[in-house]
Length: 330
Image (cartoon, rainbow, N blue to C red; front, side, top):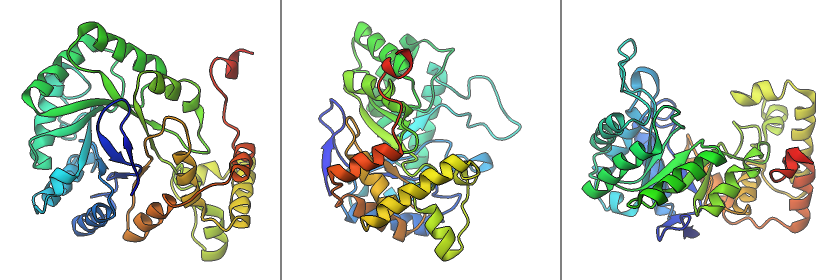
């Protein structure tokens, strides 16, 4: 396993992040535990979740599955860098009350205690804001985070789905207040087919010393060899890929991508992960395996070395927007 520092912190994390969103909704508890054990055996020490995972009436279920895994002992908790998130409403369906969501000091206090209980741990390594809260000032958010750090309930704070200006606003507020060191990571949508984060989010993260943790590295399966699977295995696309492939230009783009990787003898999903590992500022992409086989495929991506020729060809197929402001100004 390869490791790197998380942004400007002294924290060492694996260059793949184990995403757990499928644990509960698509992968049962026993299989989820097996995947986490296999990931840990491979040296993958960075585990990402969120309080709302499990979804609907099962919100919190994913954190519970991780908690029962920690409870098995064997040093599991001590070996893992644990990240979870706060923002979504955790009240039961039809039982939505004010102050049960977003980033008020009231909800942050309530949410972290509930996550700690479900996770069966006394601290969270990285507590992430799942979305921006337009109603709560960062002064209030950081005051709440300072208290949690002092109590030993969290060690670091991170963001998810933040635009570049909010990363700047958050960390400038933290610097002005003193105390907390501000955001140390940003979890954003970023992959070969969706490169808008390169305009402002990733430059902001780099300037402020945040590690970038891309989610949906295969863009909902679109970059995972979807056309080849359709042709050779009769497996139809699902989720986001279905709508994307209805567009003729997108379908041609994905076909060119798969043809290129077939020429180089590479699996599309593994190459897409390996590409992210070459990108400036990226700590490691989040992989969300539903099966052991999917985890094994993701781990193989760590061993891939993409040639300069191949990287140029990928840029030709998926050129990206370019840096800001040139991407839209000139």
